[in-house]
Length: 77
Image 1 (cartoon, helix red, strand yellow):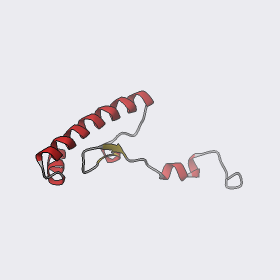
Image 2 (tube, helix red, strand yellow):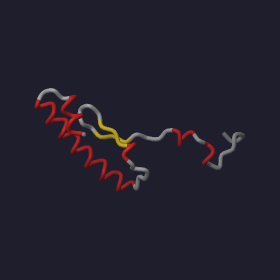
Image 3 (cartoon, one colour):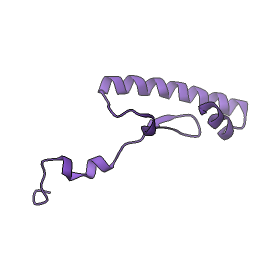
Image 4 (cartoon, helix red, strand yellow):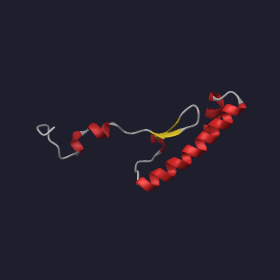
């Protein structure tokens, strides 16, 4: 599936090879960083790939604005 996506978005062989290299390197970096930082919630819905093969993690921004999970009341905010 990722291979097909990278082929569709990188028409030349050089672009495709660069995208695969980007994917491998960013995947390795993501794995090491998430282990070191102890990141949770790493299901596949949070992992995205750019057209040029870079891997990134989607941040669930609704948690950072949801005050129902914190001890801050509306009068303190």
